[in-house]
Image (tube, rainbow, N blue to C red; front, side, top):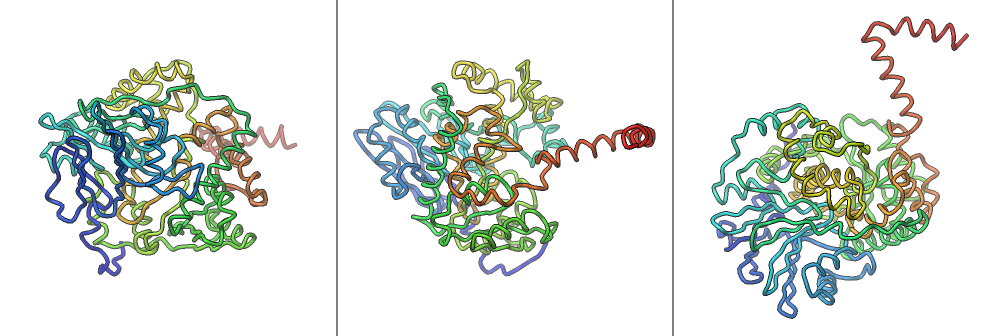
Length: 510
């Protein structure tokens, strides 16, 4: 670990962009913003977390974070809240009114009858909550809520086995279920809201069958939405946009064509990546052919003081490599808004379909079938979700990935990154996600991701002349190589490699 200049590391980074919501303000944080909402909700928020409120007709909205409009790129956050409130007479109306917006946000709705909270489609701005002495508290991270309220860690054998397992490390320390390390502190799943009157959570999406769309119509509608969302970010902020060899960033590049001269494109180069690595060589080729402002950024430096603070800011860290990225963003990006493809897996990732839907088989999809803790949590989720999957004809494996895998893993990166910059994924828009989920599965899954290809073709077709993920194992050519290598390894393990090679050469290659 390298130690660089520590002069810019200060206490303002502690719990940066985090918040508390409770029956009173948290006096410990003297410099934080304090806003009362509704009858008895008190928000205590770090100064770098944007909070916007609106009162109308006896109801009140409070937005923590930011939204962009997929229909009108010039709309401000105040405009957006007014639009949400305009035709909303109930909480259900409010949830539906958010579908057109992308961003990373939490929205509180209060009226004379109810008080509820929910967040963006991917849950990228997280809500952790507890009922403490008949008072409901929410926060951005469970450990600081536990510290505030003196709540103890769980002492559970199955949970300890889960946390100490190799699979936990392999999954980048990704949690399973809506529990936490702490007694009675829970995580709000994506697609759910929390009732702030009784501390119960309920599902609000799906609430209709997805309209089946042709790939041409879905690609056209998606192209328009993504383009407007990137223009919206550029309209309000200085933006930096990641560029790799992959699908997610190629679509975003295509959508940014009309404003490319305003954008700071970048790619991180880690110590294990030489100049021939596809995530370095392909962005360079794209930049050369299309005159982009590309910056290849060395991502090897780190800071010990920064490390101390980021470890305090989040309850669980994904990996040391991610921390290198976070420090790089902090030291070199000057509070630019980062445009990324972080929420793209909600569209293109699809777990295999299984014939018999039960907790064990779902757990097996994530390699957790031997964990009692994971299977128990998945069983609880399945009992709560299976009827919605059937009623609204949404693939249960997709919903499982969205809420159990991505809903935990995806937001971890953003929560760690809060110490450095805000990140915006245009894919994190419910109307955009629903549009792409409305085409047959084979059009929106790897390796070809046909709908992404159609979007690129609509917006900037020349970008398809440069390969996408050419060295990936998900590339069909490389998938064949992967199968051959695995077969060779297996044959060597059982002592049959030389025999098979002999007959292969004699019978096939003669």
